[in-house]
Image (tube, rainbow, N blue to C red; front, side, top):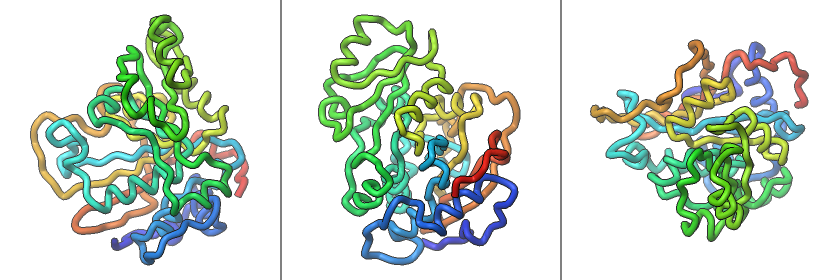
Length: 288
């Protein structure tokens, strides 16, 4: 990998990226990541590049998204994101999961991509333990209909219990079935209130939040003003067709400005990291 923009080389005095670089400089990833490789593509280097802001360790939630798209904006190839991925993209995907407390994902994506439970990675075991994190991130599924395969490994083989987030008026009998295999959080009526849902996750101590979409969920999170960060992998592919963009469905109340803080290249793939600019609570004191 070639790191074209290093977060530590940027002037972050105008936004919360200052917290992020402080986290990297002070080792706020929660401990040492064990990795034999070196260079910008090593696990340790990627963990530093993608470190959460220092304040998440003191109760402030931070929601980042990890998505992939082609050059023409397509978020899927033949119905799945897999065709747009690469070895480096999967490496970063794994690092982002290893840093997170919880992974927020839509039920449609769970069904389409065959989601499995988060797994523990020995390279990150010490870092997660030092940060007070569970061995693996929690998978939290957002669903209105509760149309989920409760016999899938996501519910029968999790290292940490899977969470299902549904409206308070979801069918009572189906809710009881889900509660038998997962922790249930209810938020909103008719549809999931994502602000309430992400606050409920933070209240459980899961402040390092990651969403992997899909496009509909990401659009809803962005429209609700909840998205702090976007990690976008750009594949050197033109796909055409009618695939959705990474945000699909919900209308944004206004154009949202993001600030580039990191750019990595490998084999024509670009791995970008953007922070929200400015963040609504930028006046809050830094805890780094």
